[in-house]
Image (tube, rainbow, N blue to C red):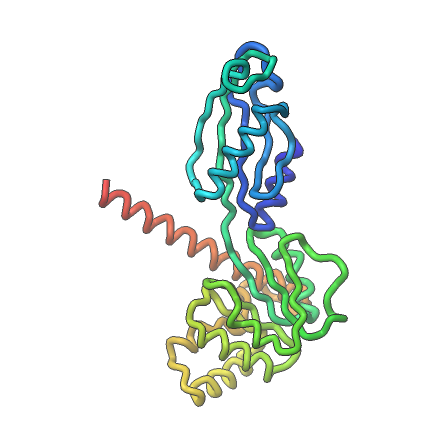
Length: 270
């Protein structure tokens, strides 16, 4: 069952893959029905028996990946006639695309709450870029879906963020928080922006943002204090759970909305 662990890891890292399963085998074949392997653009895991069959299956899987295929496909192979393998049997393979949600989280700041939040994000279907200007604050070990970005000016990283990023502003400096919030709001293509702080901090930021020309709609997009109010507590771990809960609630709501719109469109075009 190692393929399950592999799929979980690939999903956490946001890596698309094809799950290949032997659906049916007749006669002499290298592996039996139920055997699985996983193929990504760069690697393959486990085996369906090796040889020309596996070579051709990997090639087919990577073709599906390059085409961003989203539907499963069945392929049948006669091992002796078409593949020149001595087994001589026949086999049917199912190719299932595994396309993890591409959620990108930009976490600015490496303080106590951020350090407690990173392991929680590490278990979610997202890619995390963790940004700070203090190398000594980053821990030695990170979840596989997390990439460090050490830079002198964290706000300079905002223009290079992927579109529809989830942005969390949690630095040690209010002026830096201000610069980051302004840079993110100016992009206007983020999916979420949250900032750690109190209601008092929010009011001060609202005043500064208005003074600098941001309209009320833009200011309303800022989640501050970040986190679900229902999850109480002042410890770093408690705050981190609250922030993760709000993040999960937000992206699941967005996913539900997208599915509803897709179903509505399908009903009207059928």
